[in-house]
Image (cartoon, rainbow, N blue to C red; front, side):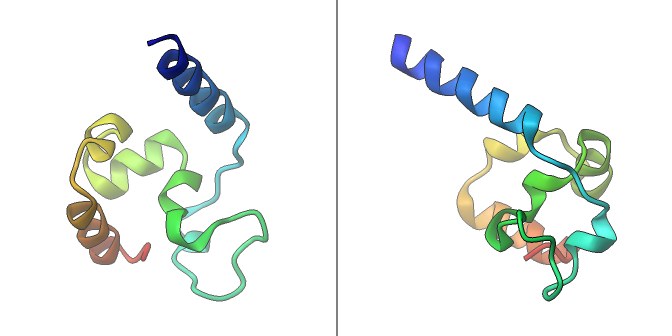
Length: 79
């Protein structure tokens, strides 16, 4: 249990330090900022942009099955 809590805290801390970019920047397939991982563009949205784009918060999105996350990212142009 302690390891899981430590991993969760590390994940939260890394998200706090992660830069955020405008949706229009992340929808590009070329000329992405170098720190953006193309397979996880949604991680670089601000919380408010994330909720506006996906119509749910990050916790709800992360609880979805992988196929559903992929379909949602395709629908909003972040795949």
